[in-house]
Length: 480
Ligand SMILES: NC(=O)C1=CN([C@@H]2O[C@H](COP(=O)(O)OP(=O)(O)OC[C@H]3O[C@@H](n4cnc5c(N)ncnc54)[C@H](O)[C@@H]3O)[C@@H](O)[C@H]2O)C=CC1
Ligand SMILES: O=C(O)[C@H](O)CS(=O)(=O)O
Image (cartoon, rainbow, N blue to C red; front, side):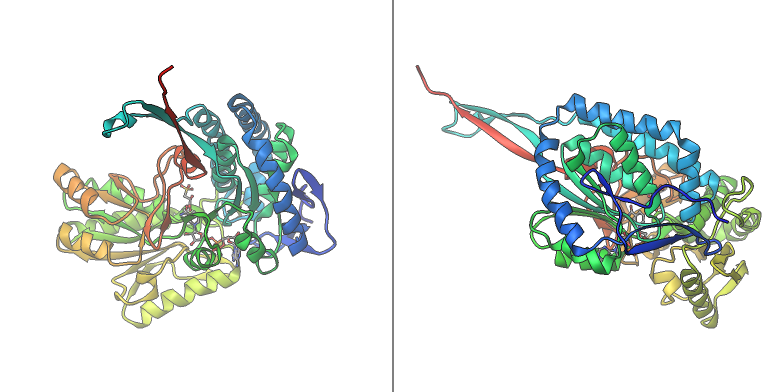
C-alpha cells in the first residue's frame, strides 16, 4: 500500500480547497496511486485571478524586509522537512531519492537567494542634463512589480523549478498563480504550505491543480494576468506565446545539448562529466548531454572511457539509496524513446549499450553515428540516450552543434584556451561550459536559451528583473 501524502487540497488565494473532481497522482515507476489532487475548473481559475489581482496590491505594498523574512522562513521550513520534500519529489516524479535530496537543497537555496536579491532590487539615477535643454532636470528610475504572474512548470524538477518562479515573484512584490505539471503537483503544494506557514499574505499565492485543457486557456488568455512565466516543452511554449496576447512572457524551453571533446582534452574528466550530464533524472533535463562531437584522434579512447561510466549507471527503484537513475515519467514516453532509437537504428545507427525498455524504464543508451535527419539528432530526446559522433576538427563540431533549432547550453572539453574562446564565441546557446558538461547550473547564474530554447532569462537575479519593470521619475527644478 502506497504511503499517503498530504496534498489533497489545492491552494486558492491562500485557502486550502477541495473539489469533487480529482486527478490521481501516480508513481511513474509502477503506476501505484500516491495521492489525488483537485481538478480545478475554469471558475476556479477565474476566482484565482480576481483574488490575485487584489493580492498584487498587497504584495506590492510589502516592504523588502517583509518579503525577505517570508522567503527565508519558507527556505527554513523546507530545510527542516528536507527528507519529506525529497521523498515527495522522488515518489511523484522521475528522480532517485539522492537526486531528489539534491533538488530539495537547491530549492531552499533558491528561496534564500531570492531573499538576498530582493534587497538589491534597485534602480539608478539618470543624467537628463546630458541632452541640450535639460540642465534643470534630474531623476532616477526604480523597479516596480508587474502585478499578477502566472507560472506554469514542468514535471522534471517539480520543486526547484517552482522555487525559481515563486521566489523571484515574491522578491519582486508580485502575486503569483502557479500551475504545476499535472503529473507532479504534490511538491508544489508542499512548497505552498511552506509559504503559508512563513506568513505570505493569502491572496498573494495560488497553486492550482488541474488539467491543462480545462484551465490552461483561461489562465493564459486572461487580461488580468500581467506575465506568464513558463517552463516546459517547445510546442506548449509556442502555443502559449500565441494565445497570451500583449503581456510579458518568459519561456524556458527544451534543448538538444551538444558536448564537444577536443583532442587535447582530459578524456577521463570529459567521459565522467558526459555520463553524469546525460543520465541525471534519466535524461529528463533540459540541459542533458545529447550530442557528443569528439575529434577523430581521440574518438576511440573517449568512447571506451565513456562506455565504462555508462555501464556503471545503476537504474532501479527510485527510493533506494543505491539507484543512480529512475524511470521516464510514464510508459508512453519510454515507448517514444524506444521508437526514436529504433528509427535511427533502421537508418544505420549502432547501439553501443542499452536500448532496452522495461515498462517506464529505459536503459542508459549510447547510439553511434545516428543519421543527421533522425529524430534523435534533430529533436530533444528528453530521455537517457546519448549520441556519439566523430568529427575532424573544432569547426565541424561547432557547425554541427549549431545545426538544430535549440540553444540552451553547450559543453566543451579542451585544454586550449583559444579553442575554448572560439567555442564561447561561436556556439549559438545561452551558456557555454568549458571543461564541464552542458548540464552545469547554479541557481544564481543567468539561465535561458536562444532559438527554440526560449525567451528571457531565469536564475534568481534575472528572473526578478523579468518580473519587475522600470518606472522613471523625472524632476523639473524651477527657480524659486
Ligand atoms: N529551459 C528550462 O529551464 C527547462 C525546460 N524544460 C522542458 O520541459 C519539457 C518537459 O516538461 P513537460 O512537463 O513534459 O512539458 P510540457 O510542455 O508538456 O508541460 C509543461 C507545463 O505546461 C502545462 N501545459 C501543457 N499544456 C498546456 C496548455 N494547453 N495550457 C496550459 N498549460 C499547459 C503542463 O501541464 C505543465 O505544467 C522538456 O522540453 C524540457 O526540456 C524542463 C525543465 C527546465
Ligand atoms: O531544466 C532542467 O531540466 C533543470 O532545470 C536543469 S537544473 O536546474 O536541474 O540544473
